[in-house]
Length: 425
Image 1 (spheres, helix red, strand yellow):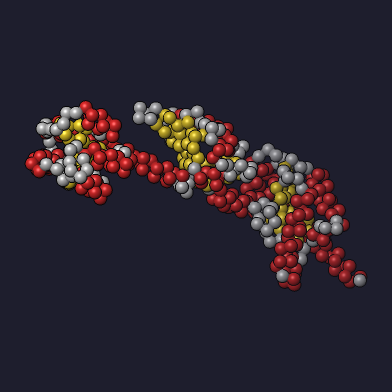
Image 2: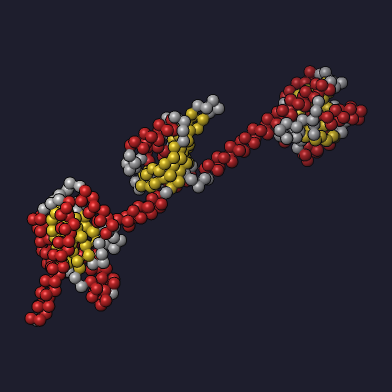
């Protein structure tokens, strides 16, 4: 029989025998059977060697001086109940056999030794040792993977084929605010935020139940009700027969990225100082209205009087406060459906779809009335205004020019009134 070397695992064996001739004969056989063996001449020496080396297999005679094989086996069993023990004896005594069985001796070989039987006994014990090692390695690997999943920096969820949650890791709990016991056995829809379109969930479920992987972004809801965004990958888990047994979800919190993107989109269409629409958005809406059917469309142009003087005299912080106050006035009088925009440093423009000239003039009168408001009156008084109405697309640009001209006329008249008032006083 050739040396045992199964998948690069090696077997160690301790052979204990007091009779020299038998010991030398069997040792020669063992050299061809196992890769690592040592010899002891009695049970006491064998027990000492076992404690030092912890061999995989113990091959021992029963009758020996100082300590017999049964006594040695009993002590070895106290150290390790799973050691593989092969008992050799020339005695065909039922009492010895029963004691071997009570000690859990794994194999029993009679003398004179049948070397084929001995090799078979050693191979049986070796296979057990190798199988045990594989199981221990698999357990260690499972434990390692379990720890890796539990301690992973990404939120992980595992569900069964019906979608019920069977596992979540620590990062999932930290991100969502739920403890594992809060979600186990429940459906992931408990995270549903109401932000995602229903068809997205249908696409997701159809994809993974067909055995494919799904990737995408979802807005979900934490236990405290706050919304967070995830970049998600969900893949089916399969049994050895390729049947789907569940689903694995690995995600990444992208809330900050989504907020950054949202801020970029906002800044692309809004003025950061006032929160009003910016010039780019106003121009895009103007083009849309030119091509649409929302006539009549009224246009209001507004300008802040004396902004440069305020900046030069009191500083830009005061100038910014004047701009924000003027924006508050405009937002107070115009509708949410109107496009109120800051199109320059001290200039504002408003588009009013489906609004005729009488309505827009009434709205401008409301700004005039706000000049007496205790909070916004000074800002209302700083605005020069002009308005016009277009009844079709061809008139829209002309209406803007007319509104702008009327605004500058209003500004000049207000300046004259102020000078006249100053002269008279």
